Amino acid sequence: MPTHQRPAEVGAKSRFCDTSSPRKGLYDYIIVGGGTAGCVLASRLTEDPNVSVLLLERGGVHDTFIMRCPLLSGAFFRGKHPSVRWNSSPLTAANGRVLEILTGTVLGGASRFNAMLYTRGSAAQYDQWRRQGRVGWSYDDLEPYFIKSENAVSTSGAHHGHAGPWNNQHFDGFYFDSVPSTVKAANDMGISYTEDVNAPEGPCVSCAKLHVTMTPDGKRLSTFDAFLPPSIIMQRQRLDICIDTIVTKIDFETNGEQVVASGVFFKPFNSPAMEQILYARAKKEVIVCCGAIETPHLLLLSGIGPKDHISKHGIKVIKDLPGVGHHLQDHAGVTVTYKVPLSDSFHSLESSLTRALTEFLNYLIRGRGLFTYPTMQVAVFAKSDDLASQGEPSFDHTNREAVPDIEIMPLPLEATYVTSQKSQGFFSFICVPLQPKSSGTIELHSHNPHASPKVDLGFFTDAADFEVARKALRLTLKLGDKMRANGYQMEDYLVPAGDSDEQMDTFIRDGVRTTFHYASSCRMAPEHDAIPGVVDDELRVHGVSHLRIADASIFPDVPATHLQAPVVMVAEKCADMLKKTWSTTR
Image (cartoon, rainbow, N blue to C red; front, side):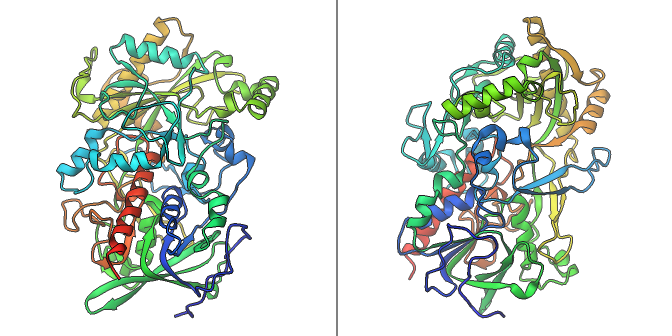
């Protein structure tokens, strides 16, 4: 085993990395993954000046103008952000199509380039987790952690926080006519409008104004910016951050029959030479925050997971844990697209240099305009039980225990990103089944930590998801028809060929896409549950001491919402769990 040496800064030079400490590679906590959750956890743990933390991040800092500008850093310019991309396994239920897998490689993770949406999800869903046996995970248990991180600029009420480091707000007006047209069409169909998508008493069915994580002067506010800005990093003398670093595996020791996580091996991300491996030791715990793709990948490389799969790759089995990498879920999306006036579309920025320059100057001078736009201002949430297979919907707004299983996302652009018609305006709906029955898997390609894992998204492997997707599509098409009837100018561009179930299913198979909401691949559940769990209610890995997970992989099922706010909640809760555990342990 390599000498237990102090980890010098690995990879690219960073002004954030303190190399003057004499700790010689020994830390209270080691956090693997400096993404959306990892930045929050590192910040909260080092609030105590006596606590030492090593944060290891595969990517860099990338603290640039582009990464702070909401539009330029987001999905509309998807080729510009720091990430690793590779293809999924062929989708067996979707004509063998392969989809792009994307994981962030930057401090702050996906919060540096996502749509900035702050949506907590339905209180009823968290209450379902509690009824399933997840002690401490009801909405009432979790709301304090949402509040703790939050500074709600546009909303008030006891269920919102106003003292946290992480701003969220909504826009007062609508930038594109398609947005109020969507709101009016939804209202005409019986779907009411709500200003606060995060109100726990809100209806399951709604057309909701969305909150985004942004500063008042129009800058993206990632968890890196909010929880680990340079000012905090420089103040926290017992926080070390190694960027451009890959953790090759977790180290374990045995204490009788007990397996204990004792440290990590790591190396420069861009160096294939294994002899450059360094080692750091954790006095208390190792916490993995690599996300729902890379967290199970690291566990498998470290010998935790299905024993036959691990052994096949020549890796020593530390703990046979079948749930690792299984029950991977994501929100599959299907896009319906219309031609609209160019002036009412993001594509006007591509076709008109004058408009692009005008909007850019507006952003530079005032922090306003399209360059602050998160691509979505509202979303329609519905319950498939309210929708007949054919005919008009009838919505139940009274059931506060219901959880939406459909989201329809209106975007003022061509959301399949394949069109070359830069002189044409487009408007899209992405239809999303929010509570999929289908799930996929994550497995090793090889024992090489640089090799991306094999990812089978498993979309529509459960036929029940087709029924929900068909209902979502039909509701979407009715919304489009209502918008047109109300006078909004739009022409079919990418829609199903007809209304039969077979035609709908063909459209779904041909057009299904990921929304990058990877979750539940190390789910919180008993080890021998019907769908095997990986962590307990305290986020501790089953059968391994001093090892926890805090990211989207732990959700029992993918939440019926966008995942950024729930992931930060998990990190906040994990920090409190760690503090409580070690305040009583000497």
